[in-house]
Length: 369
Image (cartoon, rainbow, N blue to C red):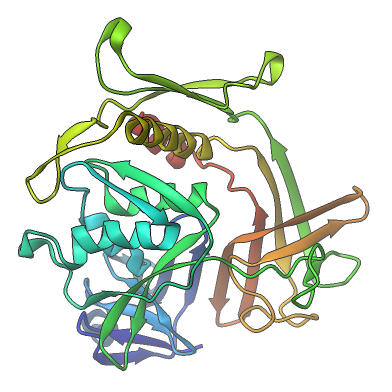
């Protein structure tokens, strides 16, 4: 596997064709990342500079921005690189003023990117060479609003709630970065349009599996508090029809959402009562999406068995996963892939189903409350 290195104008400046190890993590619901270890010498140090972009030679759409590098000098000198996906560019922008949009989920997410990174009122906020893809018409209507949030985190909240994802892709020929909203293809045994993709040890395309289901972090009712104080504070409840033991509540402080506000163009705007309540309702749904039930299969895939990743199935696709010993079948999305390559060969790990929140994820979520 060769890795190409680009500068921020997407000019290719070098190739890495020999490395100690690499690990490429791609995710449907959060930021991907590349970890790379090479021999530490003047050539690699000069090539793998912070701010440069790494991409696989056979996948030039997905780039990883070098933000961290370190040196390890023990038995040999090694250069270690940590590079998040290009989605990290949107972590450099925040929602400026209160913003809200309604419409198709693609168009809504693209509107937030447009006014904060592509064509903001303050030209200093423009991300150079960032463009927005044409919409494909994902048939999901939404109303979303927020203020002050980091743009990347806000977009993931919207995407996770509506079962879509987003990427900043490279177009090395036109020297452009493209913001795209997308949804994986349904290849599960539940549908009859596309060829089925089924994973199981019995089909000999899975080396090992780890099944987890958990309600320990699960919440299903959101009490959302908006503007106002005390008895006159605006309150709405999401999923208020859930009762008894089945009801697991969370309180959401949405005071940042106001019915009258100054928008990103420094103009005063006022929402109707119905529009404001819809914003509060959507905030509650977004928060509940962070506390979903966990049902997941972690699986090591046989790269040489029937079905090839990147040809027959892709990140975000809906597939079927079976374990005949447990009598379990899931029709679920591929939510993450981890491709590890060393001088001895490559392995592929795929996670199907819900995300299992890491300790860091939970800390970030607690801070945002």
